[in-house]
Length: 442
Ligand code: NDP
Ligand code: 2IT
Image (cartoon, rainbow, N blue to C red):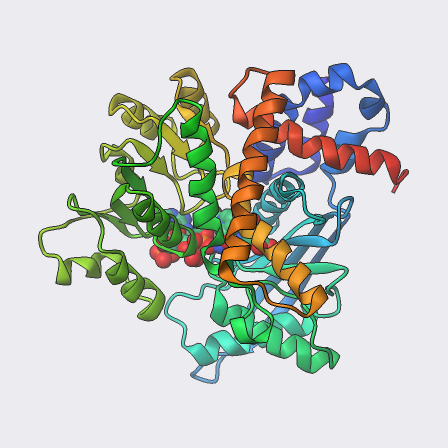
């Protein structure tokens, strides 16, 4: 399709490099689709899908523990509702700005489509930095944030969840405030506590789902996770439960990180210690060495990709794995890469992996397990029922298998079989496109 259309979109969204990166990648993958579906081009589907249906931006004032006034900025990008209510996480991180949330919301549209569940795409958050804040500061912030957000969301309208900096604690505070303001107990957020509407398995879902997808990729080469050496960046929700599933599948994770640095423990990471440090104490990954003095700690998080491994799982943040890191991994014989984070590999990194013949699981497919179980949480809330862990986990495995199958099928039909970047973009887009065509010009 005409490249000037992409140029117009990029120009219209100036100063938003992550959004440009996400839109450009999907645009490239979709070329063969537009060739075969001129009706999509005539209906300006891509121009429409790249424009959020609605963006909400608001002031979040709150009082810190010293009684000082603090002001942050809050956002919700309601990107696309062709397949269901807007659905996607909230990120609290100092780097959050509109362009970052537009990239995440855009990706979320196609990821949610791949799950096969009825969810549109959205994302939100704030430039609030939770590091070093007390529980009471986090609560006051969350209450102020929800005071405004509450008027824009609802169980059939927009259902937020967690992302970087938003976990069970923050979801609890936000749910409490929503309930108080609206006088209603509904499934307006996912990732809730287990005794008030949360789903078993949601905490583990993104990390577990990632390994279910990687397992399907390895199967195409008659291989498995057994005895694989793994590097999993980050040490938050996704990295911790990806590591746990690796261990269950007989693999050994030897390196993890946070935004300050990374640890290498050749004997295999002691995951319960990482959970104690990160989930309970909210500490730094370097504290791992207090109990395991024989492990290594390196300042700076990017060096983690020089650690030799069979499977690399970028599970921290966007653009954390660049071309140079990809070359280092390829030089060390990496077999598979699974993106637990959103857009963690730069375009030159992706190119290097695809050209190097590595099995590459792109984020939209690989980390869809989290939002998939959020969809299952919504289904349980609708019925006022709670399924068992095994029931949820079995459904998650089925969803991840289907995602692999449909992305692979779309890659064979439109691109190169096994190019799951193109496959996931195309399979995710097709359902949204068909729904938008059927729903008229909205
Ligand atoms: P958490 O907040 O639980 O953990 C984030 C981890 O990444 C922390 O270890 C953090 O280190 C590290 N990190 C964050 N920013 C940076 C940075 N700029 N450089 C280096 N390291 C960084 O978040 P999640 O585990 O939930 O999210 C991780 C990724 O997975 C994100 O890309 C998110 O969008 C994606 N994702 C999450 C899903 C979920 O269900 N939670 C679902 C699908 C995708 P530190 O503690 O130092 O900040
Ligand atoms: O990026 C993601 O898919 C998430 N942060 C999870 C979103 C959700 O609604 O569960």
